[in-house]
Image (cartoon, rainbow, N blue to C red; front, side, top):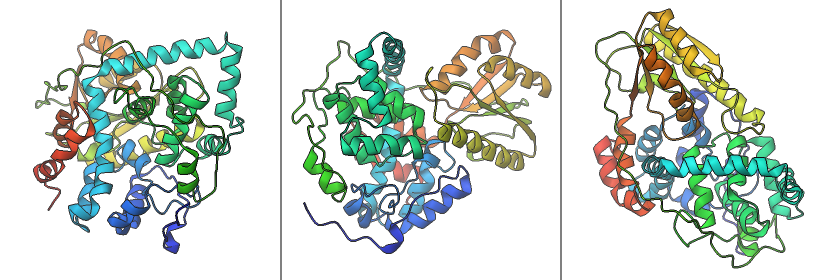
Length: 418
């Protein structure tokens, strides 16, 4: 086992997941000194939930855009050169890559949802599958690292990125469980659970994202990068990648044709973007509505940690939005978004609603269900896309390398280097 890198005393810290913009900014400020070469040399070590100083842990705040990717990149480049902080900056753009990749292939999300729901129904009829699934999510498989990570995920809503890859590999290749059920388990519990990053990452481990190239968890690697905390036995050593019988050919870049005119409008805040005041709006809305739902993913129970984080993130976004736009707002928790949005429009006496662009995932699915009723009521829905997404997503048609080559140009285009 190689020697552990030396960490500063201040890096042996647990993280308080407070779902506010200010908490996210504070975490960013505290981690900035380590976004350079120190991050590149220590980021792969998972030393446990009480020692997270070697990684930023910004993903829950970025996921819901309590803080923005461009803020993280700009602040990092204000302290380090691109070459010094390249590895950290790449990690920020990996999220953008997965988001863009799924935008070009929405059928991947649709097929995943269909397979996931079918497998959940199968659990009740297949006792063997149910028993193996229960052991995995309860952390009773007797694979030391896997069981610890399963319990950590449920209790904290977070896992180190390296642990996520190991966990997914063991789930798929050693425990022989469907990857869709594992992806669902993650998405229901992770505070940073993102439909694109989560789905694509599980497919990558399985060998479906990059065809024929899977990720195999190895005991020696786990032992080294957990500082000797774990040394699992019985892992499948050289698993074959999974296969699928359909092609995920990319479609065209999503376009946003509608634009706000001079009309009065109401604005919708969802957990996809809790930063309405930084959107490129031509003029301010006359009212705000925050939309949450009782079930964000599947029929299975969602984590209370995740639900509470989302609810409080939207509440924080609502308060900032009301101050920035000098208007009133309300938060609605419901699975019937159409009725609530129609009532909201009538209350404001407007026929236009705006929302930050909704990427592929459960929030877009819910809005798509509501759109026919909104159209029937004469209500126009305008989606506002951020320049950051417009700059990144066109380069996410293939592997990450295509986007990676464009990073200096994207950074220059968006003015981050200033």
